[in-house]
Image (cartoon, rainbow, N blue to C red; front, top):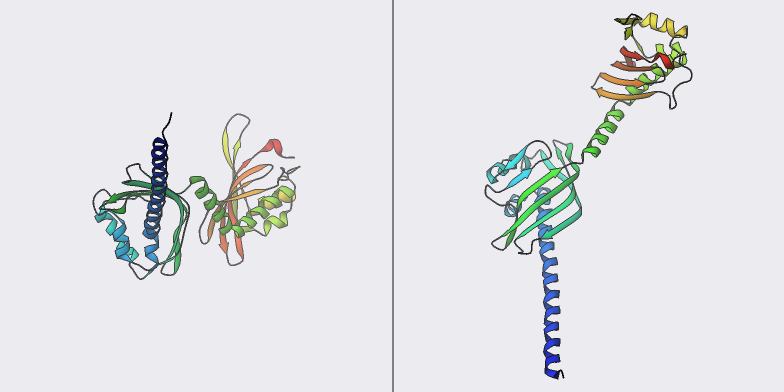
Length: 295
């Protein structure tokens, strides 16, 4: 038969366990809140250039290690301090930051923690916008003398997003050159010499590798007048044009020069363009003809 006193002791033990578990859970959440503030302040300090704040958040020994987004690494406190020459320069101004998808874990010992998040850290240098967007940011903290400090960090970007953004930026910067390249290719494939002529430079030349029946190779070339004459005669016309028409892609662009690849029904061409006062003009073309798709 179970005694009442035994039941009371068991109930009391269960109550103490529940209270202890609740307290432990609350303490864990409090620790995570403290850690998150450390992480946020390690970027946010730049808004007011509160150098002492940042210095208080980092470990001051050779154990400090940071993988930067580029090939550079920061190893040790002395190496990290060199960054203050840039950050404290009046020409540098932090403009905004955003941290999202924060995840924080604390080790069972309560002495180590790690986090991951996505960071936008935007700023200006001499009034020009710079900074990082959609940065994957991870790091490790240790509790030293009762205080959380950062010992490691890793910044990186998703390679697929970087490539996509770079391509989109390149196409946007080269929009006017793209239009000239498309007019060139569409006009050639349609047999519209006037459309092509509008975007040709006076010194235009087109080259193509020609394979002879005997298996030899030669370089065929056409100057501006010959190229236009052949378009008027219909020699470059393709029927039908490939579904989707002409696809023009900027491969490189500078202030007054650009390289564009054009894919269409009967041709693959790399166009060199130059920007004149009247607009972009095609000055040369290196072509690969696809004769099985031509009329």
